[in-house]
Amino acid sequence: GKGVGSIQRGDVDSEYVKVIGETGAVGFAAFLFLLYAIFRLTLRTIETQRDPVFQGFLLGFLGGYIALLVHSIAATSLTTIRTMEPMMFALGMVAYLHNRPYMDPRRVRRRPRAAAPEAPYAPATVPQTA
Image (tube, rainbow, N blue to C red; front, side, top):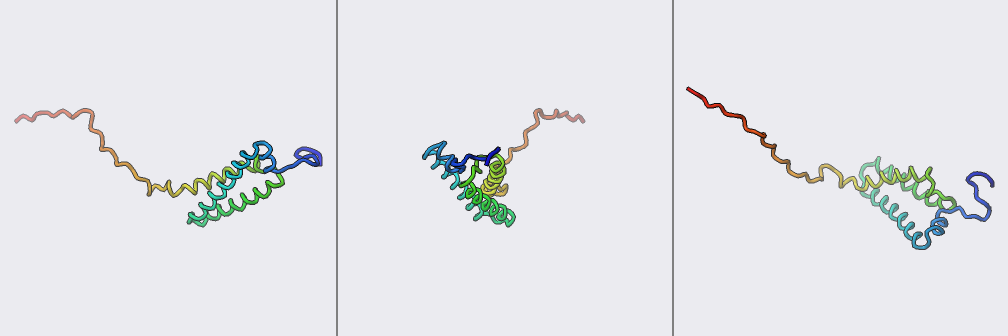
């Protein structure tokens, strides 16, 4: 078709082809490693998460992530702001949930509190006279 957002016949509209064309084999390998690292982080977080609400969120994110990867075969989904902004926000939440056990205040070793500072001056003592 013709118009805004359309591509000419014969052009390729694929995220993977775009990345390999712009960054070469080394950049494409790094891109695939990043995609795999996100997938692995999500799976590890699902395994360690006990809260069913967070597990539901993580499973939903994983399903959406896989759908986005499949969709990227025929479209440039990973470099458009409309799809990447919410995905990166959700990925930040996944990373938080992954690190959440380490941020539990009950597990943080606290330093002992310092003693209360002494008064800057001692009150004057008045001698008692009989």
